[in-house]
Amino acid sequence: MAEAVFQNMVNQAGLADQISSDSAGTGGWHAGEPAHRGTLSVLKRNNVPYDGRARQYSGTDLDDFDYVLAMDTENLSHLKRRTEGRAEVKLFLDYARQAGTVQRGEVPDPYYDGSFDQTYDLVIKGGKALLDYLREKHSL
Image (cartoon, rainbow, N blue to C red):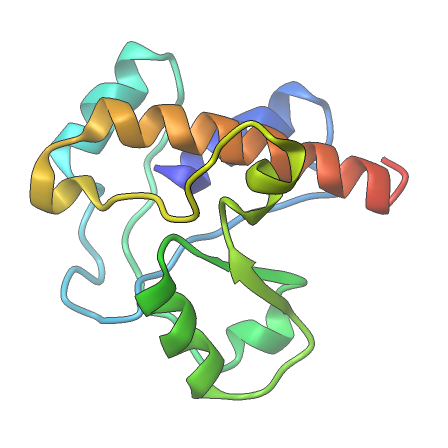
């Protein structure tokens, strides 16, 4: 969901030639599958296009990307144990917390509790704060 929402924001800002996003799970349980139907439903209701497929995080991601963001502290810890790389590794909501738009640090996984709308709201706030951060830091 975060990939779709953030990439949509990037596209609408006219920055698709400068910013790209991708998502991956720390486990390979759903590799190759489309997003959960609840995610696809909330994206469709909000006119956010997405046709991606799940993939598993690769150790090279920390060298291939500038930022590798985790949705929760468990996955953040997993990422930090995996390998070294050039990417900035943080929680996705760190940027929104710094901007004062959210208080919490983690995005809940709606796969387990069905909170797709709550997750969407957090992803919107996190994506906006991340885009603002990237614009300022990289003069975009």
